[in-house]
Structures are given as C-alpha cells and as structure tokens.
Image (tube, rainbow, N blue to C red; front, side, top):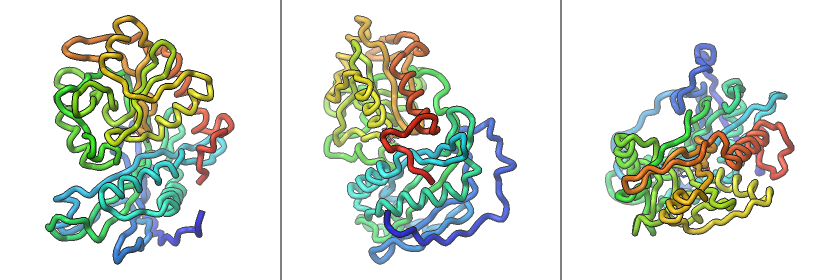
Length: 354
Ligand SMILES: *Cc1c(COP(=O)(O)O)cnc(C)c1O
C-alpha cells in the first residue's frame, strides 16, 4: 500500500441510521450516510472527499449523458462477530475497474486510491453494516465522464464516486431462466468484459420481454450463433454435469467475475473436476434431458450463489433437481460465507480488513 490517501471528510449532522428499517432492505434503495467523491482534471486525480450522501449537480451537456462513458464495480463489506469489518477481495475489483476504464478511454484510477477510498468510507459508515445472516454492506464505486461538450471524443474530466448501502439476499427463490437466442448482451470486439453502464442499458429490454413470458432472468448466449452459453443476467453461470463443474471460459464478451474466481478456487481445493471452456446450449439441454445436469447457478457479488430451478429453451421448460439438495452450490455458499463473516481462517487472503 502507498501512503494513506488524504481525504477531506465532512460528516453529516443528521444521520439517517436510526430511521432506517434494517428488516426491510430492498437491494439498491437504501444508502448509508456518506459518499466518496474525487475528480480527474488536468491529467490527475484530486479533491478526495467524503461528504454526506446527496444530490450532485452538472451541466446537461456532460458527455456521459450523451455518449455513455460510465462504468462501475460492485463489492461487499461484512461485519464479523467480533466487530471486525472486512471487504471481500477489493484489489480484484480495482484491477477490473481499470480494465473497464481502459476500454472506455477513461483514466486509470490507481488501485490504492480505489481500495483506500472504499476503506475510508466503509470505516466511517461501519454502523450501517447489517449483521443478520446473508446481510452485508454493498459498495458501488463508479466513474463517469464530465466534460460539458457534445463532440464525440474521450472526455478530459471525470468523476469517481463510491456509494454504500446495507443489503440482504438478492434473489429470494430459485430462478426460472430463459435461454436468450434473439438478443445478445455483448459481441466479439465489443466491451462485454467491462462493467460498463451501456451493457446494462442494452440488457433491459430482453430481460423485460423474458419477464413478460414468466421468467426471472436470461441466460445470454454468444452474439454470433446463439449456440454457446455466456452469462446469467448480470452474473456468471456454472453447471454441474456428471460431477464436473463447468463454466464458460472468459473472453471479451464475458465479465470476469470475482465470485466466479472464488467459487472455482474452492472447487479446485475440494478436488472437484473443473472445466473452463465453451459450453454449448445443446450440451446443457442434453444433460438436462438425460439427468446428468444436477445443478446450475449464477455467481456474482450481488446475487452470491443463485440456484436455477428451471431452464426454458426453444419453447420447452426443463426442470432441475430440487435446489435445496444441490450439494455443491449449498456447500460453496456456506464456505464463502464462513470466510466472508470470519467464521473460518481466511486461507486465501480474500478479506481486506478495514
Ligand atoms: C458484476 C457482473 C458479474 C459478477 O461479477 P462479480 O465480480 O462476481 O460480482 C457477472 N457478469 C456481469 C455482466 C456483471 O456485470
């Protein structure tokens, strides 16, 4: 770590903590008292500040509103029984943030600024971290372009911010998912590997159409032939077929998830065969038909492990075995939680102590 970041802290004079209902925490709607902000100007990052959470004001001409130079990260902080607070693998997110920045022509944010901005903010709002089972503090770092200029070119100024908010479980029940073969999320040579706002904008209509058909989520397939599985909504996807854990290998159309990496690391440690490779829709459907597909689930920070109950493909709906008995995904969720909440030794060094 480099020198501690010089952050100007302005505390709120009216905390909203007391009036917040921690028994009702819809994802992404409840924000902690403070936020972090920094500016990129004249080729450098400056104005590191923590201020009360609140509105920000800009020219309506700022380039992000027109050309979409915006990207983000998502990670979580956990409170252990002894009161210790840790953030899960923040340097992985810092690294990915810069991959997104590079692809979107935005400036690099030094990894230590990313991690220290989060640590300072989480530390200040540590009373906002919920302690109930499966609860945590969701952390949302993001960057956007701020030049008030309508010419199409990379902006010269940017804002980096971090918001946090307490969250509970993301999905309440196993998912009914649809294999999407009309739309695609990302294309070869595009920026599917970046956590770019634009990838989400393009995913809304397909998701809405699937919901109208009664599905909870989409399984994205490759943009060229719609023959290979890529992701599950905004999570990576994994299948247990005949005792082997199979997941699409990462490529420029697939986001390289931190949860994905963590789950694969655990599986390998447990001696479970793991295959990272292209996975065809036909292979998944065949395995469903002949009973070899025992588990399928999404993996991501917000969703953690999201079991799939049924998969719709070409008008047919295929059911998976009872997800409450899904051995691998249940074991993985338990093991990940034990590490995150400090119940077991952090053997991989995944917890960053605030
Ligand atoms: C954020 C995200 C994931 C999951 O990544 P994690 O690092 O595990 O949270 C997967 N796919 C997409 C498209 C995402 O945006």
